[in-house]
Image 1 (cartoon, rainbow, N blue to C red):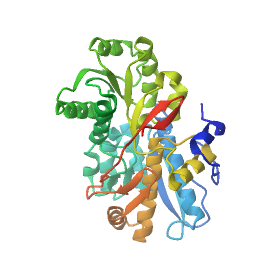
Image 2: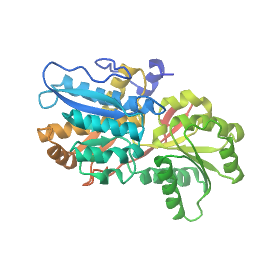
Image 3: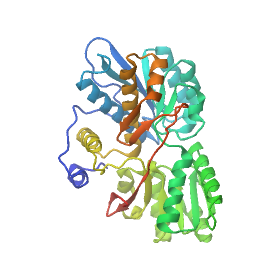
Length: 382
């Protein structure tokens, strides 16, 4: 279910700015004028369990391109966005990367969604000298796989540190229960959690349960955390995991505190789990209710086109595209070596904060803000 405009008005606090046109979920390009275009690929899951995130990537990149095209385009040409569905599957993603490379003519790629896929496809893009910017791959190895590989999100351990800070500083808990999905993201997050907590006196992970992404009955894992007297549960998974898990956990323990990752900041979570996710805390780089002109404009245009508040990861995709387009404009060419230099030299002021890359293509710094679900909406913890 989508959030309707009546609900959005209270969050946006202003009249919504309507976008230029609507983009279907599987649309493969924004409209472009006749003649040559600058082609940008979006390689992300447009089908499957993580399709919501991939569709968000595509919509955000399209929105960024529409804005540039309405203002004269890029290097005097219109931007054309071409979508490729990698289904968040390493094998499928490898085929997509090979197709993009063989077709040629792409000035860059926005994607992929997961670190596991990223580690697989990055060498292909690097070998073919194609700029790849992931909105969400948090494995620190990802950007070390080549000079053309970038990410606009923080490292996994930095997000875990923000979660631990919420637990210890805001909630005052010392006994952490951890539930993580059996993916690269889940394993990396669990390892980061244990490493960080080990250095804090009096704080411990009292139980850790691993689950597959298709799990529907979380009660065995919940029981083990309850038996260990966990005061708070950290859920490493997408909103589609967090929602039903929260419902089942709070049926057994209505007072359990829950902390999640930034990928859970989407109104799909509230639509899915309702009152069961009240009080869930999430560290994020983007908040749709932030009182900044750039954020208001982005959210207003996104809602105008899609009748939906953009998620944290959608905003990161918007900034990935914006950073790439700006670097191409600065370089005055789509030559990857010059675009790469411009990406590293420039600080792009995005809706998620400043995007400044280090020499390895990683994000230099990210400031987190904490959101909590109250009365069926996300609000910032001051």
